[in-house]
Amino acid sequence: MKRYQRIRRFVLVGWCIGLSCFVSGCANSPLRDSFVLGWLPERGDDIADLQRYGPIPAQEIVQLKKLAEAASQASLEVQQRLSADLLERVQNEADTEVRAAVVEALASCNTALAMQGLREAAADAETDVRIAACEALGRRGDADSVSLMAQVLGSDTDMDVRLAAARSLAGIDSPTALRALGTALDDQSPALQYRVIQSLRSVSPHDYGGDLGAWRQFAQGGTPPVPETPVFAQRFRRWF
Image 1 (cartoon, rainbow, N blue to C red):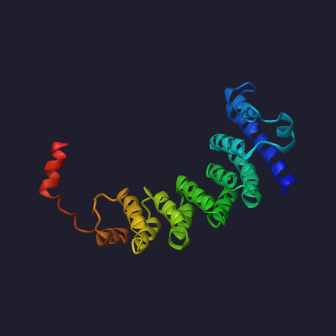
Image 2: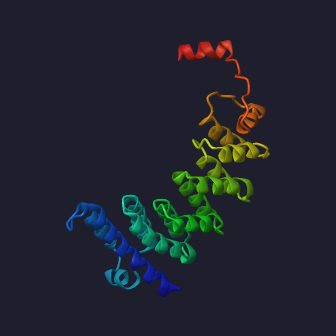
């Protein structure tokens, strides 16, 4: 496994340098230099160890973020090859934080393999990876991603993951998203109810405050009566 991790880390170096050159179109570009310099050891690191074992997890995470930025501008063919490599990383990376960063990079690839990686990440044993999957799916925002987020919101056993799913559904005005959020209002957790209301508020033409019944009706496609603004609240807004 350690040998595998070293190999994958060096493959990541190649992707970073190759994609930076592809995006910039220049052999001496600042982007290319930032990738290369990013792999140099920090002060006090042993260069021999870096050459033998590859970058440490913190360095990998930095480079994965840069890789995600470059991948979003790459061709579909390049994204497909990159997705295959990142999918393998999701399946085999032992470090939880690195695996979460790999998931974030997958969000930049508009491919079926990237979606497969996000599906696997949404069922990962580690909470942080599942949260990263929710955030990545929210950035994609396509129908498959919304459907998966709705599933996570309704079935995950960890409240932090469900909160992440509800947060990622904010701003998505689709029946699938609204139904999932409306169902989540039945949960007894005040934190989840609050987060769901915030997400529903982002797509609602009216603010129903803390009225769970009105928000449920809105989520089901109904048109709840618009609440009247109290006179005091109107004056307060004028004052401030």
